[in-house]
Every structure is written in C-alpha cells, then in structure tokens.
Image 1 (cartoon, one colour):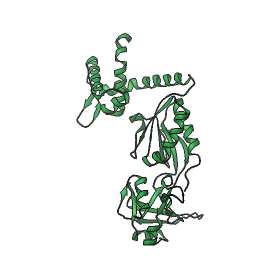
Image 2 (image 1 turned 90 degrees about the horizontal axis):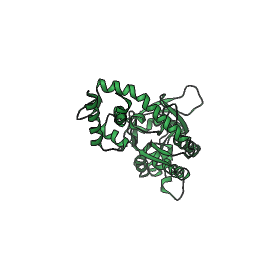
Image 3 (image 1 turned 90 degrees about the vertical axis):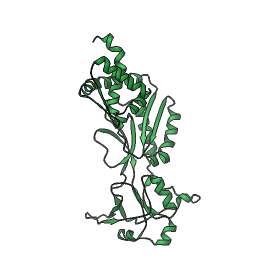
Image 4 (image 1 turned 120 degrees about the vertical axis):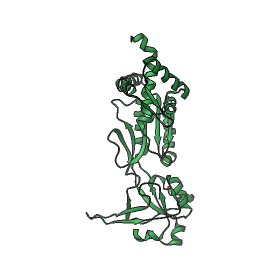
Length: 314
C-alpha cells in the first residue's frame, strides 16, 4: 500500500492503538473525542480495508486478534514518537499550553489539591486541567492520564515519581467519645472500643509499633471492630467528629486546629504508637515513564512541589 493510500487510514490506525490500551470502545471514544458508534464503525471499516479481523468483541470486553496485536505492536512506537515530537515542538513555542489529565484520591483532591489547581490555572491560563478524583487504583497509561497524585511508600518503578511531601496516619477520636468510653493506654485495649475502619486488605486488624529509639521496637497486633467501614477518609472523619468511635486518618484529613471550628474537635489516641500498613509515607506526583515530559506537566509538578512543600498540619 502506498503512502497516499495509507494516509486516510492513519486516524483509524491510531484509534486501534488507543483501543488496545483501553480495551473499551467507550473509553477509547472518550479519549479521542468521538462517539462510541463512530469508533466502532471506523474499526469495522479498517478491518474491511485490511481484509482481516483485528478486534475480538464480546458483551463484556474488547480484545485484539493476533493480527490486531501484531499491527499495534508495530505501530505503537511510531505513534509514541509522533506524539513526543509534536509535544516537543509545541513546547518550543515558549508559553506552556495544552491539556493535562490528572487523577487523585477524593479526600486529598478535595481538601488540598483543588485550591492549588485554582492558583495554578490563574498562573498558566493556556494550560487546561481535567481532574478526576477517585479512590480506586487508576492505570495511568491505559486510561490516558498524564499525572497522578498519590500517597504511597513505594512508587512503581515503571513511573517517574516526584516527592511532594511526607505524610502519616494518625489514630484519633472526639473528646466526647473518650469521655464516655475512656482513653486507651495500650493498643490491646482497643478490642473494647468501637473502631471505625478504612476498607482495605487489613480492615479487620491494626498492627502497632511503639515509637522508640530502641532497635527492637515493640509490635502489637489487634483485631478491631466497629459500626462503620468506608473507603473515604472524609466519611470517617465526620463519623469520628460525631463521636462514633476511634479511627485512623491520614494527616491531610485531620482538621487544622481552629477554636471557632468544630472540625478541630479530634484528639490523638495512643500517641506513643504508630499503626503500620495504611496509607503511605509520602505524597507523590506520578507519571508513566517517557523520554520527554510535556512542559505543561513539568509546570504542574513544580507548582505542586512548591505548594505541598510544607506538608500537612497535624
């Protein structure tokens, strides 16, 4: 096939590579700004032109045939180079511009990221941000995100990770709850308390390590139970403020002290002990590795590093 014959198919071939990464006509169409029906029709026309089945469709998923996989494997590096070349040329124009797709956890995004995004957009009016807040794990490459803000202790090796600040988890309760039920002096006493749980692999138990300078730190495992489980720290915070129990919050969800604000009415429980295995030790900006980072993404990362540098008030 000559170059002239191939040219009208370039957009459809690119659609096939996007479909390979998303495994969804709906998501591929959304990323490319076309309708699902149009995306499906274009793939069907590509298959007719190629004379071979490229996509295997079922009611639950979309996958590539052997021919489709071979075609995508051959084309993807070329499309990646085209994208990098275009981004590099555009960045040479000087003023940072373009769309940055960003994802972050709900509580962190609402409480701390959103205000910094507002100041960033005022500073860089030619950059546009598409922000998705979700507590699920997002595959950045497959879902077309440029950047993620996450709290973790071990960023993936396949990603570029910029540390924004340190973070920690803190065991807290309202003064009202502690007056009614007593203040635990040791983690083992939590079995007699209502504990509000964060949904996760270890939601039924907490492992404590005593904060000590000794090499052999004391470890205690405690099975806990309570009336509420949630996958969002804002929900748990509101329940703790209502006096429903003792719970673990990331420091970015603990209200800043303000005598005029009822949100300040949480106190730390067992301050000499640290719960292990929940949340992360740092906030990172993450991006799938690529040889070139768009200027708009670089500007956003630097803005977030400046904005988060002070960490979170306990």
